[in-house]
Image 1 (cartoon, helix red, strand yellow):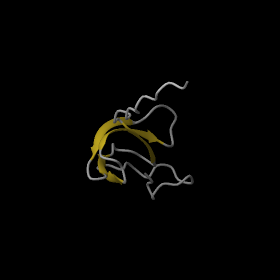
Image 2: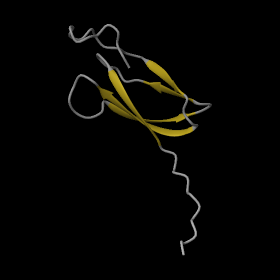
Image 3: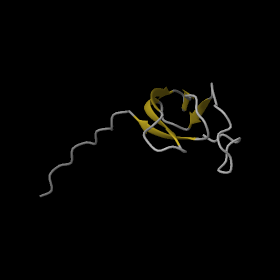
Image 4: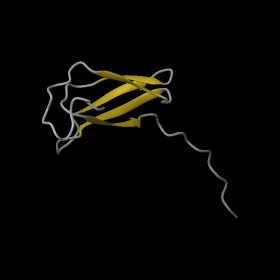
Length: 88
């Protein structure tokens, strides 16, 4: 997530508040989203649980300055593959 008002030549341009986004092209189901600040050292700013429906996941972002990176992971259990017969 890129705040166009911010670049490496400038210090913060203020807080971005009330932003949200839609991530499309996802399989329907539960997801875990880590929201990382790109200009600071440390852990994620927030971790959210959300579900994709009809290929889209709507996400409200926490207030932030500068830019964010998102790590989106499916929380859907892995499909079990059928057991293979032993090799003789």
